[in-house]
Image 1 (cartoon, rainbow, N blue to C red):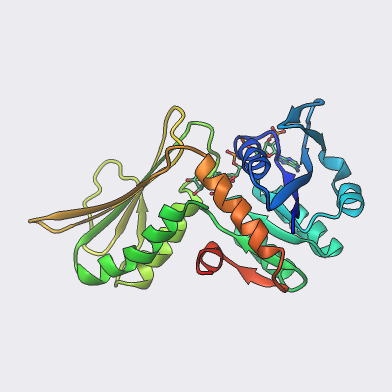
Image 2 (cartoon, protein in one colour):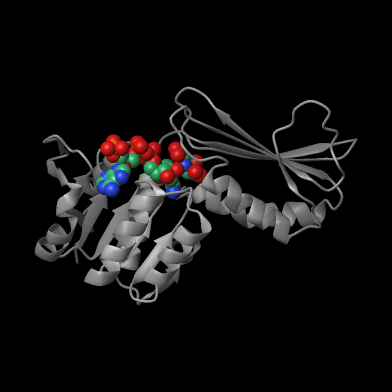
Length: 255
Ligand SMILES: NC(=O)C1=CN([C@@H]2O[C@H](COP(=O)(O)OP(=O)(O)OC[C@H]3O[C@@H](n4cnc5c(N)ncnc54)[C@H](OP(=O)(O)O)[C@@H]3O)[C@@H](O)[C@H]2O)C=CC1
Ligand SMILES: O=C(O)C1=N[C@H](C(=O)O)C[C@H](O)C1
């Protein structure tokens, strides 16, 4: 069966990759793709339509799932529209505040919703091992450094926040300290968090665990945005067969 997909944020860095990833597969097809101001563009043979036509495109082209890489406000709007239309929703957008995240969770009462701050399988593996590393090294200093391209809006990255949750769930830590300046000695239990923005870096996350005699570094480096797009399309094909509820990328990989 071919899964029909809608794509939002289609002319963005990720939207283009999602369309290319879907075009290269036989188990799915792009039913429509929208962007805020598409200016008549075509990507991989798909005409990019204005975002204002989203509701009517969903009604006419009947996608089984929508893949969203836009921004937090837009993602929430699309999640609500998908809930109204009964269409599954997959979003890789990051930077949601608590209210926005709650709105996504509300939508999951009516449709399947999957949010993953990172669709790289290597990041999922990193999430699986970081807690174990922290548990094995009690009392070690923990610092997280993430590096992204100079156009990224949110900081720290969604992936960094997710890694921090995993670290905190597995050790006895104090506050997160975002960067340091001036007189800023390290307290024993704080977690230092550092967001670098430079050039065209696709996405790097490194966790440093150290005491005074040794250090361990766990690093993930995305070489190409195609890795995120492939994971997002896997998630959309998978979610098309699920019932309403809240899912994450681990659910997709676990099957
Ligand atoms: N989960 C993951 O694996 C990954 C997540 N991300 C996240 O994905 C999001 C997008 O990243 P990226 O592609 O780099 O960002 P871009 O800014 O390149 O792309 C976002 C696109 O969404 C469009 N857009 C914004 N609002 C709407 C709307 N209402 N309707 C339709 N289109 C809209 C923008 O249009 P316009 O040009 O008009 O602003 C733009 O084309 C970010 O939150 C990022 O952190 C990124 C990479 C991987
Ligand atoms: O904006 C990006 O580019 C990325 N954003 C995601 C995040 O915030 O974690 C994932 C990836 O690192 C690329």
